[in-house]
Length: 253
Image (cartoon, rainbow, N blue to C red; front, side, top):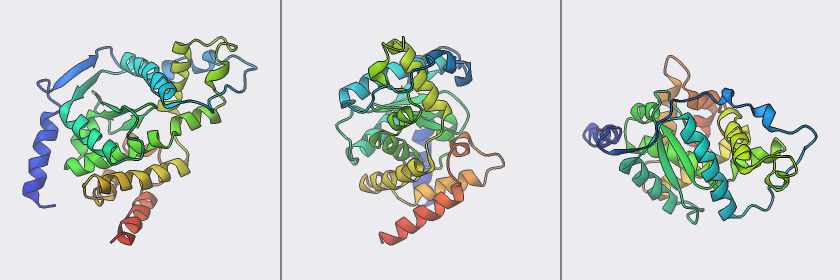
């Protein structure tokens, strides 16, 4: 991508961070996830809640409940640029029936995360780190893939927290959402889940008309920073991810 086109893309990404185009949806000061009493929310003796039969509607409802937790812990905004990129990728995905929502987290750390039911969060630090729209889209595509793959629900199953017996465990919807939030922000996806999200995210990126090379290129840029970004600290070895992505791209030529 030539520098003129890159600069054209960089400007709207920067403008999208301004107060003029952002709509604030959460004003409380961030609270670390570790401050949530995770262990206190899990009643001893309850080992398994039933999450195996969640419908799309159920996942959207759970995602909405988790979003309330996110909004209490971070300052959030919405903006047209991030939403436009996200919706373009959703249309190219295999789970476009989910009503995706995209939020900007007012946080300088380089990070992004997704929960369930279509809720995706991108930090301002990551947006600023992206050289162009394609690189930002590569991260959003990866997060969309986590939702399409039901990765948070799978992590909840693995931590033996399931919705069906929530009432038996004494957990109301808000408490269950707090536990799910804790899992989403504190417990990393498995190595296999991350590679699956890379592969599927790359498919979405390409199908949406973005440059697939932006995904390994942005990872390479982050790897070469003096400190490891949050986005990479909970993921598999970034250089291995880059190599796998480059092989996939080469095989598609």
